[in-house]
Length: 438
Image (cartoon, rainbow, N blue to C red; front, side, top):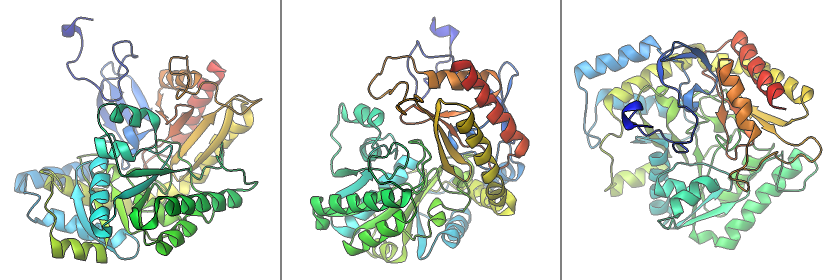
């Protein structure tokens, strides 16, 4: 294709010139977006798990506009009212003693900042993360990720060091052999303890993990898992960092996903939903003791656009929107979304499992006889994947869904402003995709 016939923009997560046509979206309202041909779609991914308050939320836009008029930029080495206000509000919503915020720009950079802080505070180098996890695509964050498609690309030309891996506490296709979720949770926690002991506890700075998995499959941990992980981290003097880039800001039915587990981490990383994706913003919420040491010793690193005033204004307005019914709406609708998705599991043999929390769910596909994926893209990289076809048919019927890591699943992560009719529309489109494909 001649360069003049296409956009000069190179999309992210792009498979090359043979990739399918890339949507060009021109407007959005609430849970819906419109492309340049005038076709409307129900955005059941909130684009990338991030437009939690919905598209074109006027109070957020107005707050950003007002901030840009007052002062559009303030150095990240200084303070400004919008930044201070947002930090205070985040601390107020965070669990326990997580009362200080180190702002960043993206989720990748928030996770990198967290491990920098953890390594300095602990005087230890190793950070443990799950296999089949995603924590970003910069070199350090990509090294933290357990997703092979990300790690292989990152590590092809640069070594990523100081990261160990442990197995995820999944119930479906679990690497553990427990007969119940409780047994699997206990085995998964015991395995993490073994990894810490094998690495040498004094060398381990932190465990970094998502309370509810994001792109790796929206799976929550079995009952009791995080309580035991907290005990293990305390026993071996290891920090527990909750990656809330996806699970935070109402996505799982609470301000932070870890709140649904009743566990207090030592740090929380956040991004995406903090501004409802209206501007890039991220950061680290740190325990008071950790923050006190940073304040005493200083932090010699920084990012030019961290805590950008316009983004912080968006964050303050987004938090108003979440508090004004959106998180409550998520809690009220979550059982109905689960019910409709489980109907697919009961109706179609190709649906192997449904799992999630709040408004973050995965519909996982597999052979009805074996339970194995029809195509495992980690192994069969060039094979035709029927799960892609399911999403394409759903898109043709006006609903956008996401892909997981690995791409054996369809992910549902709509804006928190949806209603029951939107859920029905989305699940019906997904059912149409399943029937057309299988």
